Length: 301
Image 1 (spheres, rainbow, N blue to C red):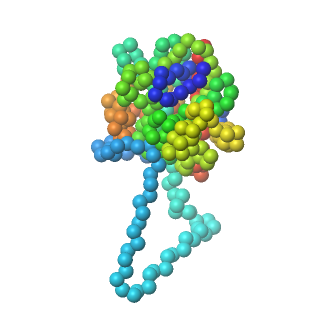
Image 2 (cartoon, one colour; image 1 turned 90 degrees about the vertical axis):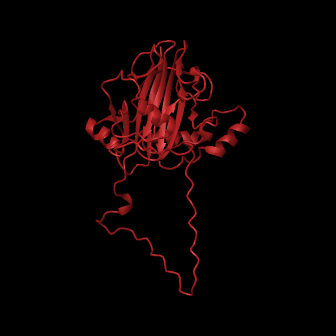
C-alpha cells in the first residue's frame, strides 16, 4: 500500500507515535515552550490569498542623492566578544511541530482521537499541523522500510509550496475539498506497515525540489511523481532522526474541532492562546538546531 496526498482517494493505516529520535521530557517545558509564541488574540486580517510559496524579499530602492555629499560608509558586522551574547540569536525559538489527529464521527464532525487508537476499515481521519516558527514542512513516507517518497510538498497542492507561518494551522487533507470523500484519509482493508517522516526546517532542504522546480520535475518525470529523494538526501534525513526530539502527548481527547480552529485553517489565520492545544507536541532539544525530524508509524492490522 502506498500513501498519496494528491487529489484522489487517500488511504492510510494506523497512526501511532514513532519511537525513533524521541525522548520523554517535562510536559510543561515542551508544551509551554511551544505555545508561548501564540498571540493572545487571533488576527482578523488574513492574507488575501493564503499561499505556501516562500516569501520573496522586497527590493529596497537606493535613495537618490541630490548633492555631492559622500555616501555613508556601511558599519561592518562584528562578531561578539568572548563571553557576550550574540544579539542575532537572542530569543531564538526551539523548532516545534504540533499535531492533532481528527476522526470523522457518525455525524460527520471532526473529533480529536488518540493517535494510538486502533482503527478499522472505513474509519476516516485528518491531520492538523501547527509550527511555532516560520519554515518549510516536508512529509515523506516509506512502506515496510522500502524506498522513501515525498508526500508534501505536492505539485497538485498549494502550487507545490511548503512554506508555513508560525501557528497558522495546516491540514492534510483539506476540509475544503469539493468532494466529501477527498476531505479525509480513509482506512482500507489492506494491511501494511507505513511510516510518515515529518521534516520541519528554517531553510529549504538542499537537493529537494519545491514550487516551480517540483512542478517541472514531476511534469517531466517517468514514472510520474510522487518524487523520490536520492540516497544522499535520504541519508541526511535519516541522520537527523538521531537528533533528540522532546515530545508531549495530550491525555484527553474526544473534543470536536472548534469553529475557531476551522476558521484559522481555512482562512489562513494564526491560532491564539485561547484555541485548543495540539494533541502531540514535538520540539528539538536546542535552539541551535535548524531542522526538526520526527516520525509517526502507520500500522494497519
